[in-house]
Image 1 (cartoon, rainbow, N blue to C red):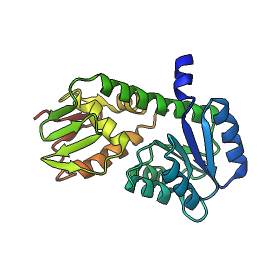
Image 2 (image 1 turned 135 degrees about the horizontal axis):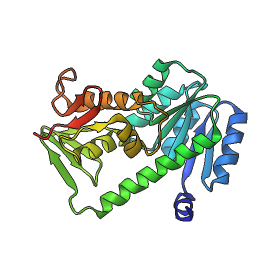
Image 3 (image 1 turned 90 degrees about the vertical axis):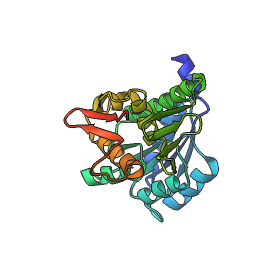
Length: 242
């Protein structure tokens, strides 16, 4: 545990929320864990700080003045910023959560939220990314090809049918990476949540479905008849090995 805390001690977390009380609460708990804390009370400044400081993780409220959180998230992904983004919102509607995930957020929590749970998710995101980086450094083979899909594990790049896939988020890449290690083998949604997201997701497997749909939009010729990332109805997903 000590090693994990030391490895995380220099991590920078940016929180963007227009409620000062929430920022104060986050600052206290995040700094107590040994992280560096940055904050902003509006989306426009939050986006500027994110692009200038390149934090290791962003906690982003949906409802913000001057620029809403969904727009901030979308613009960050358009700028190829691949740090984990955890969305916060007072909204509980499923459509809001799905929209956040579809534009590139990694996680979504509804206010009021448990600070302990939020810290656990922050650490899980860091731990998962560090494990992924370590695993890639130890691999001799930096490219993996299954059928028409090629992943460059060093550069976080994907290539389909000879064409680059330019807008995969890190989470989407990690889903593909995990699946190509098991070509033709069906992986359950629960397994993907544990292995790619890095923590128990409280039964919310919808997150996996949304992420898979985003991936298919980027790698499949026909999303209604996918040939690369296949669904095993009622079970999970797999990469076709031919």
